[in-house]
Amino acid sequence: MQLLPRAAAAQRSRADLIALAVAVAAIAAAAVAGFLLNRAGVPLYADAAPLFGYWLPHVGPGTPFAVLAAAAVIACGPAVAARLPWGRLLTAGYAAALLWTFSLAMIDGWQNGIAGRLTERPEYLHDVPRVTDIGAMLRVFTDRILDGQPDSWTVHVSGHPPGVLLCYVWLERIGLGGGAWAAIVSVLIGALAAVAVPVTVRALAGEAAARAVVPFVVLFPGAVWVGVSADGMFTGITATGVALLAIASTRRGPKADVAAVLAGVLLGFGLFLNYGLVLMLPFVCVVLLCTRGVRALLLAAVAVAGVVAVFALQGFWWLDGYHLVVQRYHQGDYAQRPYSYWVGGNIGALLISAGPLAAVAVRRAVLDRGAAAWLVLAAAVAVLAADISGLSKAEVERIWLPFAVWFAVGGALLPARHHRWWLAGQAVIALAVNHLIATNW
Image 1: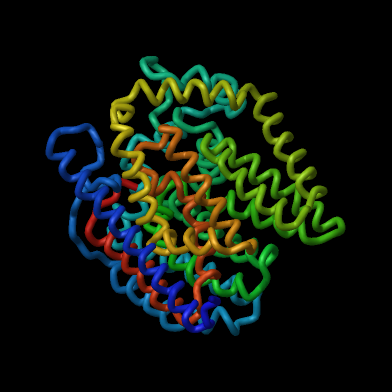
Image 2: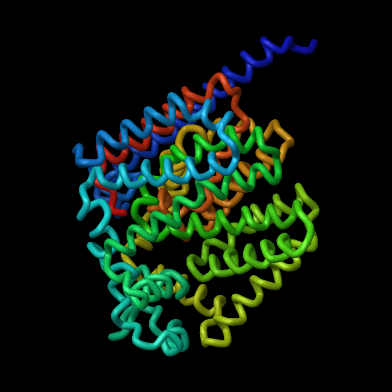
């Protein structure tokens, strides 16, 4: 017997609450298990497991701004998203995402939250002064990946392809060197996801769905780590690449071809920011599945090949770097992190970074056949593949940002009357994390 519309909606709402309860239970289980394992001396290397950080309840100068930004988006976001002209909506969404991200970062203050974030650890900026010749750096990059050599790269430079180091070297070369500029530019690029995700949804699933997504991608809980980590920058770059591919696949003419090539350049460059960004492939497959845009895909593929060729001609071969990084990973202490905990703990961290919406989004996506649902499922496939690989043990709340932000598309699968409640849940989890935990990123 077919359910009446009201009864069916009530049943779906109950199922959403069950999915939420499962997500909360998964986070709680990961936290309790992490606490007990840390007490037992197991090398989790994460005092606030499943998050990488340590417990430190605090407030800061960004607190009132973060709370007000969240309240404004919760109260007005859905209505504004429904009525504002599309171009102005994207501009407003980008500005709101910047405000949200910078406010969260400023909870830790200017130095600890922004200016010192990329300099307080031996990260990418540590090796920028070592690059006096970009061509020479690329030629010897793989020679310096393994540890135990006098000229080895620092952990994060060696753990990534040379693209991310290049980005910060280029910033330094144009006069924007130092931690503050690196952080600001990283956030400015990272916040582009608040534009790119809705643009992709509009191209594939229509404007109504895209408008519903905007408040959710603005209040993305992962903004805690977008401000500030290089992974936030990776998120903005790859999301923009997917958006351009979606535009190119749904249009015709020279402008569409240019968009396809630019999409390939960005997604190709993404491969040289993080080896794991090869897992953006499911999103490319969704675009092809929904649009049959073979021409755009071929042009983008040629552009990707061009980026790979440029790096190869300069002396860096992606596969060589990847195999050496796997060896370097097993040279470090963090390789001792137990897979048996982190295979589940990673999911707990993801459910914090993507927010409780992620569990409900996946549940609804499994039953939905629309393009928005396929984008959510692509995110799920990417994180599951990364999780099973065993090369992501902890810190995935930032490492998986390029995938996690796409769970915000789940906002388009929810009833409009529930949007404010789910937005509140997304905001609360971000505010709680940044006020209770000193995140290492």
